[in-house]
Figure 1 (cartoon, rainbow, N blue to C red):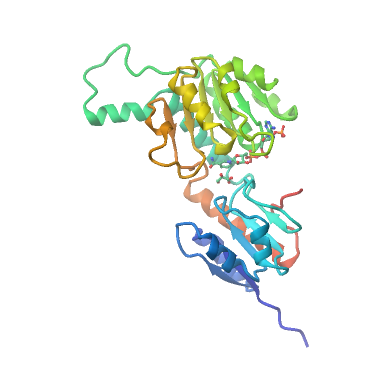
Figure 2: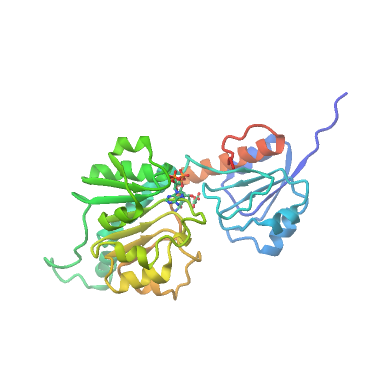
Length: 323
Ligand code: NDP
Ligand code: DGY
């Protein structure tokens, strides 16, 4: 005689790709309750939805703090986030799954696209074509900055930072600098030179931020930082908005302290449409789409579902955060 397996409760905070939902339904070990919308779950609905749950599948836009953990109660075994970043989560005695590696290529590709679009002024050019500003070919019009012969500085040469460096090198980048907490032996592949942050900031023609958001990196790119950059330098951030002091960035862009900036991440998200940064021609802002390819999002959903199942069943997760 065998005891019937207890069906565990899972709360998912948003509509996610079918690939993930299919894995959970086929596993037959949990009953899924889903916030069935593309818009975020309200705080009240989150606290209600998570009550008594054994597993929570969340997004980077959900703040998972002790209030949520308390609302979940003692059943909670696992939190699985559909992201590699985990700065939105409190991690207090609960196993946490995340989605490293599977989004690295998509995010690096988007970072290169944003860098080129910003440096070569693509959004400005597109607008000029549409609004009739394109009168003729003009030698001095819409000139930007090229990668060939440049120095690129990557802040945070982790999975994504390294993938960005690999993609940028073939554009003819002369020098690849990086900074972070530790020197990386794998940086040799891109002839990366580990330098203090100040050196990177003052010597780079392109500064690319791809570090994690931590107490140490919060507000790292501030007035002091922008003052050290070259007036011709391009600033790109695809990590988290809070790494940048946006008032200081606005000052740097509007005063000509730096040439231009491309941001895939902001504070807050979405950035209000009347935000001063959106008035600047030399600032390109994207709506946090680094990992947004169909296949990547499908694979992220699969991985987060498999992480969740492993957490529910007490087995090894494909990608578990180690604290
Ligand atoms: P990794 O953990 O591989 O890399 C993070 C890097 O941050 C490490 O190289 C680490 O350097 C660096 N870092 C940590 N602390 C500091 C510091 N004080 N100063 C400088 N660097 C520091 O993560 P991933 O590359 O996979 O992802 C990086 C981040 O990218 C995520 O945390 C997320 O916020 C963001 N992201 C954004 C996406 C988007 O859509 N725009 C998509 C995916 C991720 P060290 O090893 O030396 O400590
Ligand atoms: C992450 O995974 O942290 C990104 O910001 C979204 O894919």
